[in-house]
Structures are given as C-alpha cells and as structure tokens.
Amino acid sequence: MTTATEEQIIVDSWDYFLDDDSPAREHVEMFREMEWTFIQRELKNELGYKLGVGQEPHWVERGRAVLYHRVTVTNYGREDDYGWQATNPLPCANAVQLRNYLQKGFRLRSSVDPLVDVETSETAEFAEGDPYADAPYVVPGRKAPRKFLTWDAYRMYCQNRGVQLKYDPPGEVTERMKEYEYYCLVHDHGFKSLRATQNHRAYYVAPPPRGRGQNHATTEQMKVVIPEPEVVEEEVPVEEPETAKKDDGLTGAIKRVARGKRKK
Image 1 (tube, rainbow, N blue to C red):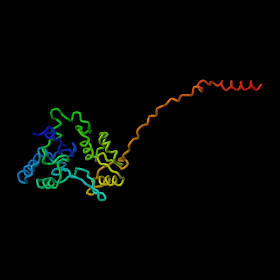
Image 2 (image 1 turned 135 degrees about the vertical axis):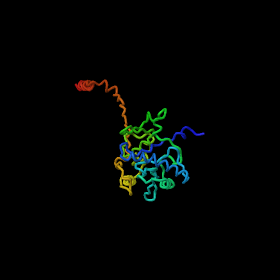
Image 3 (image 1 turned 90 degrees about the horizontal axis):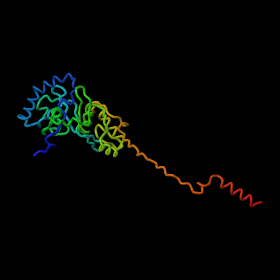
Image 4 (image 1 turned 180 degrees about the vertical axis):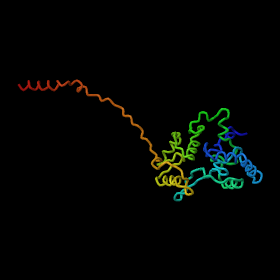
C-alpha cells in the first residue's frame, strides 16, 4: 500500500529550460511526438531500461536536453558537495546515448531517480484541488507565472534560469546561515572562509568547460550579517532625598542669619 506522498511526486515539466517564445520549441515538440516515443520503446524492449512514468528529459533543442549530475568540488583535500546541478545541453538523440548517461549516474530530474514514477507540474497544475493555487513562491512568466511550493524548488529554478531571488529565506535557512561567515542562498551552501567562498563563485562564473558561465552573487553579497539585537533601556526614576526636596533655597540663608545673631 502506497502513501499519498509516494503517489504524488511532482517534478518540473519537460520544457522547464525552454523559453515560451524560443524558435526551437516547434522542432522540439515534433521530436517529442515522433522520436521520443521510439526512444522510450527501445530503452525498454532492447536495452532493458524502463523509465518511470512521467520521466522525460528537459529538451532544449531537437535531440539535445539538460540532465542533472552530482557536483562535488575538492578544496585542499576537503570535498564540498553541491548536490544535483543542471548540466549544459547534452546530445540525447537516441536510446543508447540517453541510457549511457543514466547508467553513469545522471538524472532526468534532480530530486528523483529516473526509474521512479512521477507527475509533472504541467499535469498537476490543472488537477482538482490545485496545490499550486496558494504557492508561497511565484516567478512572473511571459505566458503564465511559475509557482513553487517549497523554497528549494524556487531557488533551484532561480539558479538554473539566472533569476534573482526575490523572497526571504525560511526560518530554518536563516538559522543555518548563522553557523557560517558566508552563505550562498541560491545554492544553499555555507562557507567559513573567504577563500572557499571565492572558489565557489569562481566555478560558477567561469565559462564552460572550466565552469558554468552563470551570473552569481558577489562575495560581499554572500557575507552573513547578523543584526545585533536592539537593547531597550528602561528609565529608572531617581528619588531625591527628602531634605533636598524641602530645601527651597531658604534653609541656608536662615542658618547664616542665626550664626550672625550669636556673634552679636
């Protein structure tokens, strides 16, 4: 018996990386209708590799797609794990090419194995009881806005599309940031030194194949600044001595007069 969570693994639709007005869209849709069906059949019947229901590459051109791979960077003997990151467009024009990538550990979606059944957000958006109706994260689009239920889904979209984050991170991320000197929100990764932060940024801004060729926040923007708590000073009333309260300036004068009379 499967739970409701297992039945509804929602992933991004196949055109996640394809702009609505891209001239390649028409060619890609023809490729999907005519050739993608045969690729799936060949994967299953001839190569013994059956993709999960709803699994499909992120096509960006005819026979070329964006996949996901696990990124780890070694800094002076220490490995930093950056999780599943989108690749540059790769040739996936036939079943053999795609099978080779998947057997090497690549994925069609970053959050799930290629053999697992999924439901695309394109289908889920029009389902009864639309869970995206009150989505907390929304990115405007040409045809329709992109909606995200979780912070991770939102930041991943902004990361892959080069869109600046507009929302504040949730509380658990804010608390995690306090443990580091620098923090990259879009990659959800913290650093305890300036050198490690600079290496992280250098990898993403460097042109391919050495890096990703993406826009990225500066080291200054990634610096964690924890605001100091406001100290509210309470005013404590100071009580004057009773003698001081009664002294209206005449007491001293009366004493001087009394001393003068005794001298006489």
